Image 1 (cartoon, helix red, strand yellow):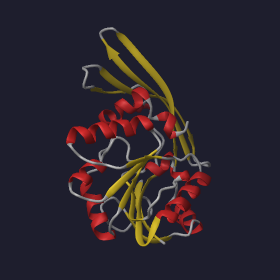
Image 2 (cartoon, helix red, strand yellow; image 1 turned 90 degrees about the vertical axis):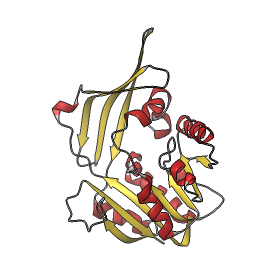
Image 3 (tube, one colour; image 1 turned 45 degrees about the vertical axis):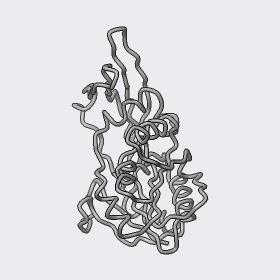
Image 4 (cartoon, one colour; image 1 turned 180 degrees about the vertical axis):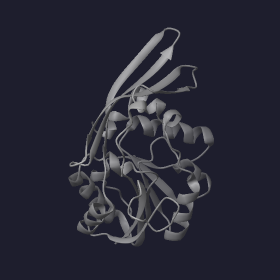
Length: 247
């Protein structure tokens, strides 16, 4: 399922409350301070860390494929008294009117593109929007197969209106050859009046350090750095790692 269709309805409403990982603004503030402005966050979703970066005065815009997530971002920005520029576009179709010295993803959002062909198109569009002296920060994730204890386990949170939001993984197809993990998931909204359930297939396509470096070179980008999440050199077996790319 296309990310623009996945993050709709209950899924978009639940995203901020039920996501398994947060992305503090400090890492991206440091990146922008070093690489320069203007900046662009790919996959800005409903505004983390984009809104905090705007609050700190950075010239940063956001792009996301999901209209529902961008609507939530706009509502949060208005409530916080912040001005923010966002664009509803797919990564592989990125077509904006300016170039950026800092382009980044706050988390392994590129893994949502379901194959190498789309990832290559996205990297080519990123290169076209990158200033000559700019850089790109790309976190990536190599997921392990889910353990049996993860299926049926319910993650839940309470929405602003008091309804109970839930997420549960039902089953998984893990294809190491294609580097894809497809998880059947169910989102729910539960109230005194009843429940609303939405089933989705959550597709993750991962890249090895070598395969992604090859895609970057094919897109006309150079690998300037490769680290773990803490900024240390990679040892080769990390589940998550971060590429810094330049033209």
